[in-house]
Structures are given as C-alpha cells and as structure tokens.
Length: 94
Image (cartoon, rainbow, N blue to C red; front, side):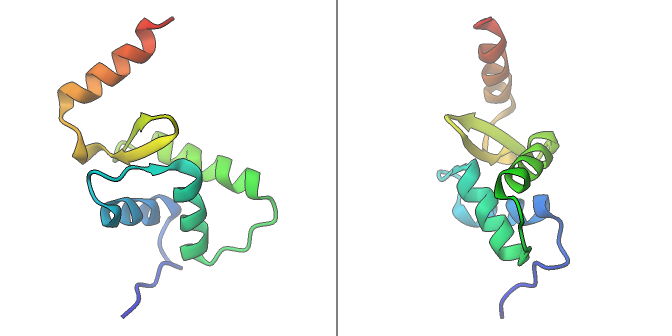
C-alpha cells in the first residue's frame, strides 16, 4: 500500500525519503526537494521559490545534517563529534 504524503509536512516527507535512501546515501538538496514536491502532489508555480522554502525548513530542522557539496543526510547518521567537526571546519575557514 502506498503511503499518503498529502497530509504530511514537507520536512517529514524529506525525512522519510532520506530514511529510505539509507545511511550511506545522502541526497543532493535539489533532488531531495523535487522528490518532496512530487510526493506531496503539490502544484508549484515557481520551482525556485518552492525549493528555497523547503530548503530553509530542512536547514532549520535538527533531524537533518548538511554533509558536503549540496548533500544532505540525517543527523542520526553521524556521531556527535562528527557534527561538531563539520561545524567548526565551516567557521575556521573565515
């Protein structure tokens, strides 16, 4: 039976998609967001605005972890020390 995504939030759908993709398979944010839009069955007038809106939601949700080069995974996939190292490497380049 197919899951009904129409009543789910975009970030919950993104979480389900990443969970199904598996720990060693972070996804490019545009691929992830386009799949969210597709599963939600949402009619989008301005794709760039929709991508921006959903990207912001994902970025603010602690369940998600930016990996590198536009790839996102789930925070559960990475140990806490890895998260700190990724954060400090971003700020130490300044």
